Length: 99
Image (cartoon, rainbow, N blue to C red; front, side, top):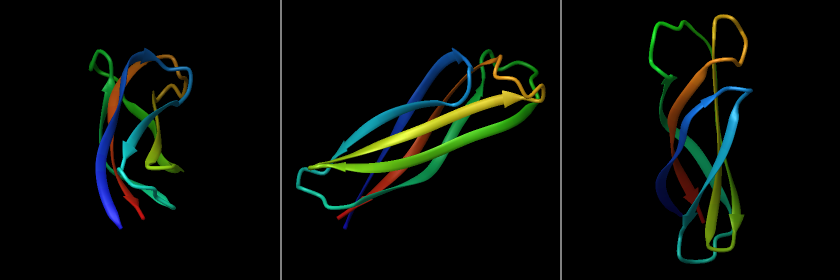
């Protein structure tokens, strides 16, 4: 079993719901299974002004593609109004365990 770390950066964008992006982590050898674990996050409204956080949606998942674990990260941030109408940005940090 090997462990690698990585991150997915979500640039400033007006929310229309949670956003998803990927990061490929190459282990250099064929892997048969992989698991992604959330290790940290840094997010906020952009600009980082006086919003009141209402909901955060953060997820990570991994799929095997030969020697690569493809990590799918999701980030969604909305304020107390319960609408996806504010700009937000952030980084999702993860570890991938593969064998």
